[in-house]
Image (cartoon, rainbow, N blue to C red; front, side, top):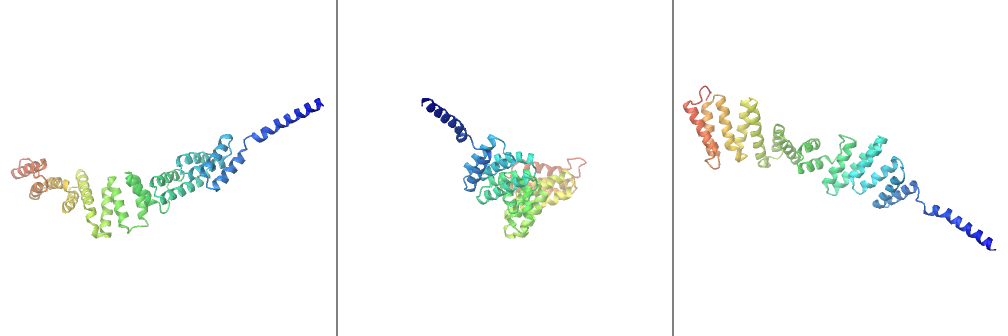
Length: 308
């Protein structure tokens, strides 16, 4: 009897030993992925991500598992982690790039609708990483404005140009495009858009006078350095007619006087130099003294062989 009891005890323990691993073993990857899918469908993205990561840590579930985790990261707005996983998947199979682009663009749209321009830009930059040059309708202008507000005008410019393709008569977009060109030093193109803005919104001309004057002054100096004196004078006259920017007006008359002197128009040069004093807010700045000296040099021929 005792022997039978001992035998039954051994068998029971043996059965338990066999059952414990079955009950306590971690589920397979397929089960973890399935639980993740169910959690994702319920909108419980943190739980879904935990299950997908569990599958990734235990044993490689293949690219599908990697993409599932990336998708969960995106659902949580975690762009960097999602991008890293998608890079892993795409390295193994290029076709996953399409899924990556689709997911990142979808997130960019959601962030835009939520008013998060930084999140939108971050998602779109990730999408562009996988498909450089993609065009997303409706996001070009918000992206351009985001980069402009961040001071990244070189990145904003092509996006403004893209937005203008379907909004050529939108004065605000034309104005912002002009500003982007001005900020990167492309005043020649900026003036084209500022002129277009003035045609579209003639009652708002005053809004661009400072910018037009500043760009005209800049271009006059660039042209003068290249030896295009007549063209430089045209831009200076445009700036002087606007009388903007006011702080540069005295220098503009000084530059005009020098250009006219080089062209041999001594009388007009003297008039320009004399205008420096009226344009200088203080009436006694260093430019005023220089202008008076130039007038004396022209009147009394103190510069030798110079035209004036």
